[in-house]
Image (cartoon, rainbow, N blue to C red):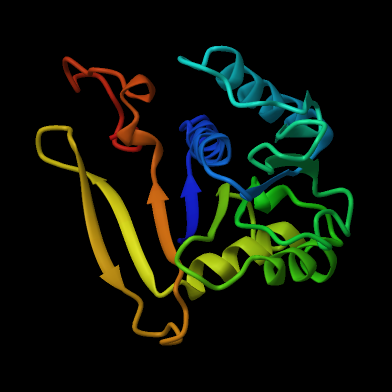
Length: 219
């Protein structure tokens, strides 16, 4: 799976991906997940999400060697456990994760990644994910100007994606998904670009009873 998600703020994407990685790492052996946020504060937030999943999990917990701000490892001191883990780090470290074989990679808020990220972090991380059906890469970000390094890298990845999924609002206010193929994309590109606008989130919308009294610009 190769996905690039352009979204509004607080759409729950980071929570969804973290949950997806947690279930896979805590259920199957030899899974390696890496989550990269744009700054240390966001790294702590993502750690809190993982910890919450672990502490509220139903049923028997798998053997856990450590749970810290660096992530979680499902193993034991003898090394006979699942041998799966999820690491959490910041894009401020240019060589983060590049020496590992990664099966699940989440790049969070890519548009806010620091200036070294495209030539250092991304070029080092992406080749560590094997090109097979079991591996996953999620690029995800809110919209920012493409003039910055992080914004330019995300903009490029989004626009070069071969497949497109646009979420629009239907006549009844429901979310409608429209799929297209990008005719300009390389046939070897396997990424799907997904656009999630703010107005599909019900809590971001207000019911307007009347349009009386509003200006032409407001309309």
